[in-house]
Image (tube, rainbow, N blue to C red):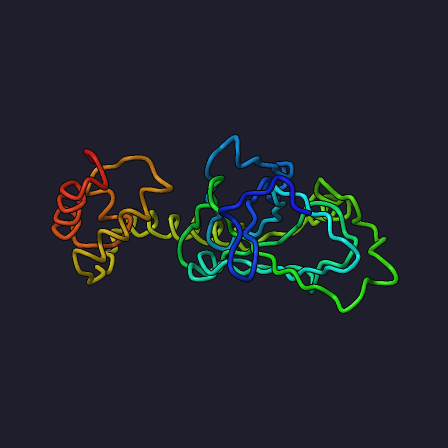
Length: 240
């Protein structure tokens, strides 16, 4: 009924599924839809405000007396990832499971090839279904064509695109402040808060001088230096 079957994925009331492939929308109008196999990249960050379709590594084949109910695991929801999926998997369905994800959390969430993120509960019917599933997604092992076409032809900005645009505008505003000699407001944060902000910042930026980090984040340079020294001692960063 599940292939490949992994005994460690068997839970008291459900079975956990791995993500095999991820489909991401274009980030610009010039880019194609992106297909990422997690086995090849090992880990993929789902950025804040980024939307993705995912396909399970496993293939299911349900008998006529079993239906399934899908959900995403709390390891994702606690980080702000929302899952979108059908109400149930009908008796007789055969194929991969497809789920849509949206990260509404404050940070990127890593999708790793060796962790399970989707769970399915099986329910035994009182008697076999008179009519098994025969819909358009039967024996669907790749992303369905309607979803692929929609992603390719959407032609609109995603939340992630909007976030990137806003960040670019903020950079332009900071540069304009520098040109006009306008002093920026310094954020009051603790060293621990600064550590988290710096780690988040370094995910999307090359290694920079502490003064550049302080300028970009709007944090007092002394706090930035203290935070960096603390991060070095903890082994979270090397030289900056």
